[in-house]
Image (cartoon, rainbow over all chains, first blue to last red; front, side, top):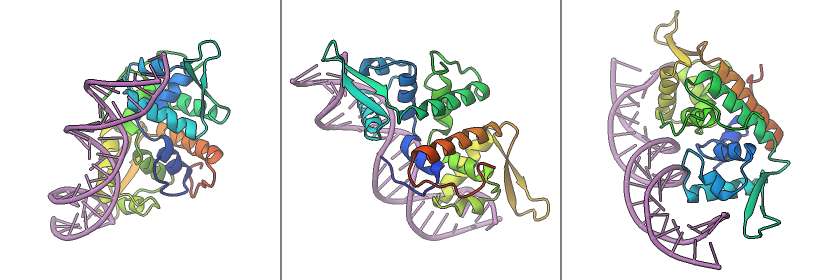
Length: 113
Length: 113
DNA sequence: CAGTATCCTGAAAGATACTG
DNA sequence: CAGTATCTTTCAGGATACTG
């Protein structure tokens, strides 16, 4: 987690999730992915250590929850918590901006759902 | 400018402005600041080289325009261009999320105007 | 499957001095 | 005032090997 530079909500938000990976993990969660290897399979090719770190960060912040699958206990599932749900809107807005302002961007799966 | 990892609008947006500084400069523009030293004066203490680089990036992307002051030609003014205006909403949404989800954050000046 | 552990590197950040 | 130029440092990212 990065340092808090001021009490500006924008600066603080950027200190938490202002990087190239965190919100992509959230995007995948929003899109319905729940497992480590599903996140890994995304186009952007996130490295295992980076993904691991981001999941940990999001869990520490209380935005996602980690749980063993009820059927196959070796499987792990991640989901957005209630506290994490507002991130959906943020991700949607970013997607929106990208779609409108960046040529050739295309939304693959259900973020806008 | 960073590499484009995929055509996902979220990934592409993050590749452009997904860092700790760029959107803070936009915030200041939205708040009505126009001059180099006004940006410098913000609480977060951005370094001159970083600010310079971000202004250049935003100008290259066409989101801001640089212009000599009509009265004092030595003064430079920056403003959001028409293409840059949609960034206001993005910044507002981020501010919103921060205000609602991060304790003790407080908006100082006119981003929500 | 779901990670952890290392190692390595480049890029970004930060500090500071300087200039037209 | 509005930057540029350097230098140094840090650290996030990326690659890869390994494990319960």
